[in-house]
Image (tube, one colour):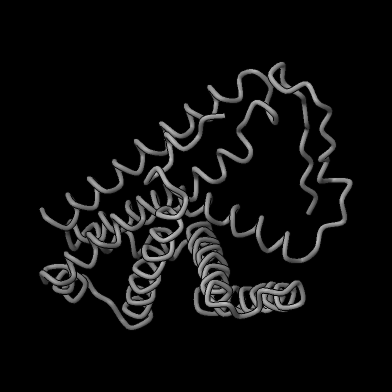
Length: 134
Length: 119
């Protein structure tokens, strides 16, 4: 994944800035961080779908069954899998944050190990969600 | 660049703590909902669960936590990327529009959840 940022100076601050992240070899901790952000933004949008499903599921037995039937379709199943996987990554990365807040794994080495563990667990969880859904 | 005026609690330290407390509420709620959904759920048992007062309160807590958590998270993202340095002179306007849209959406989410659970 490459994050390319176009940098322009503003009239208020004319000093040249060189922070083209695409030219920097990022450590795994940076990818864990940006993924935490991306999954967070995705969850903001996914919340709308989850609220809609919750609304439908509680309105009546007919609409509950309609949601259940819809979730059985391949496309809805994929969306469900994606939301579950994205949420799991976000939660795992958040738990890693809390552990680091407690003073565990705050070194660069600890951060790298923590990020790798989060990616590995999230990947395993995505596989498990796939097995459960299909 | 004035950004603290649109932050959730006006101070970074308070935002930091709110972000963590709300994350625990959301984690508990999603684990509970996930556990329920992994078992066999039909309309009667699902409805009966949400008819209980403690579940309504739990859901409302999760809704308020979601709103605060997403507000703080999106603010962090917006103030990092939607800036004049990144986007040019229109950066601040774009960021404020996105912040306004996100904030209104989150208020909408909370109202929606209240309507779902209490009607």
